[in-house]
Image (cartoon, rainbow, N blue to C red; front, side):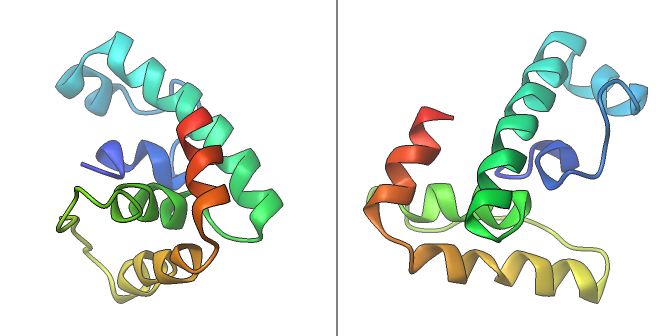
Length: 100
């Protein structure tokens, strides 16, 4: 689940979505929000989006054959496709994503 219920898209601010926290657990959701903040900082530096990085990260792993994610609006499909731009950045980005 690369976008972790939307937390890694930047869609939610810290503590704003109690429904998702109830679904995956408050501690896990807080972890996702901390990760999202670090991912957002790296995305800004790379001139991309947190969602693109979150989707690209498993795709940069040679052991991963496919990444499943959903979209409910056409804009989300376009946003998810930005992960292809990140794939072109190479191994240094993967190392930085692992550090996050």
